[in-house]
Length: 163
Image (cartoon, rainbow, N blue to C red; front, side, top):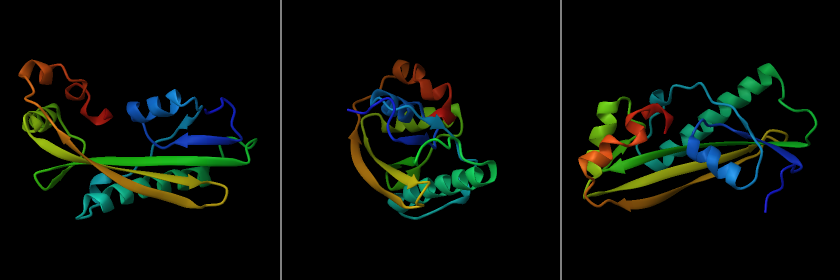
């Protein structure tokens, strides 16, 4: 069980509601910093390579900002930076965050009665030692038919860039 005041600080390098919720439910307090990178400029053929490379690029951008701006808290012996990325692979094509409501609707409609793979990565960087560890995981997701009224009510169609 996590403690409210561990001997280390955590920076979550993400604005993802799901990632925030996971850490919060585990009982951790953390600071949020987002990386200002152009994810579309980073390309890899394999989804596993892409998600790890993107998580590492996010970590690099945040580390660079911390070096420029200075540390967040000087009272902790260690600060861990957690960055991540996720893509969907549908019919052999890597799909990242939808860029519009229309694209999000098309994605979800396409999954109806079908399946896709979700490939995600997590990279943890110790900001004191500079050591970094990470990896990826994949899961196959099968969908029943998704009714149009369910698609119409999905939050991702309202805010596609907050997934």
